[in-house]
Structures are given as structure tokens and as C-alpha cells.
Image (cartoon, rainbow, N blue to C red; front, side):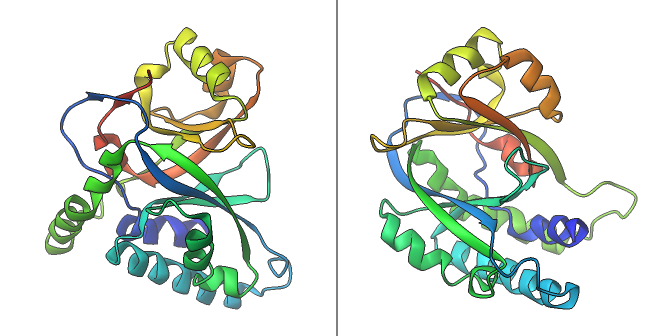
Length: 234
């Protein structure tokens, strides 16, 4: 199943392309969505799961084409085993995000359930729409060399209950300069944040951060994510 996810992720992971680092605090509203294991996951057959994932990926592409879905990717062996993947929707409204994710065949089939949280992150995330389309067209017109690895790799994602403590720890561990993209959960009930690190091993990041109000997991993405503008935390 991981092979299916990773191969399709090449065409469906949605990221931003930019050439230089920028400064600036979170300045746009989005909705961060966890895709969690749903009530039917244990009873869906392998054949059913294969069809569900085909529809899941096709729906992601549709939402991207409609300029609604910005970033998507699966977790790798997360600390919370119910976490399957994440979406970032380009809407400030949780109710709209719930409607968007409800169109996912995985949610319809009960393979996933969704949890939506308001997120503040750089407005430059929206640049991905035209840039990714151009990159996707280039890839489609140039057959991939089968001897080369696919442009997908593991990253490390830090999810914090307390953004201030997490950001201080990331800076103290000299990991702040390796942050690919980040955002802070909005609302008084969710003072945390999410930070994707340009690293491959969660254990290495855990060792450098130490214990705190955060979890450190693996997360898969297209390598285009490395061309995101590096917006510093301030």
C-alpha cells in the first residue's frame, strides 16, 4: 500500500516552488486537516482499499485543480498510529474544509476520518498553484529515468501543543534554519504548531530537541517541497 501512495504522490503532492529565502510571520489563514484511521479501515478488504486510494488520489488532484488543496502527504510510522496523512486547505473556514474533505472517497468509505484545525502560515503557500502545474507539465513531457529514484522522500514533521516552546527548542537545536514549511494552529484551544524539517530520521530530530510538548514523526513528500520559500520564524 505504501508503494501505491508514494507512486501516486509524485503527481498529487502539492507544494510551492520558490528560489530564495524570505522573512515574515504567519500571515494567511488556512485549515490543517488530519486524516486519521476511520471506523471501516479494519474491515475494508485489500481490493477495496486499492480502489479507495485511487479515488483518494484523484480527488486530491481535483481539489488542487480547483485551487483548494495546497499540501498533502502521508505520515510515516507516526507516534499517534491513527494519523494517516495531512491536508492543508486554502480556506479560513473549518466548516468549508470539512465539506471539502467529505468529498474524499477514503472519508466516504470510512477508511479515514478528518480533524480540521485553523492554521496561520505564510501567504506564499498560494504560489504553488501555477508553479506546480508548470512542474507537473514538465515531468509529464519528460519520461523518468527508471534507474533514478522517484522524486519522493521522507521528511521529519514536528507537531507541537505549545508553539512558543517548540520554536525555542528548534532554535536552540539549530533546526530552525532547516524548516521547510511551518504554521501555527489558530484559536485559544489550539496554541500549537507544525514544522516540517529537512531531515530524514525522526530519531535524530528527537535526540536534538529532547522532551517537550511536541511529537516528532516521519512524513513523505515530493522533493519539490525543498523549493518552498524558507520563511523564518519571528
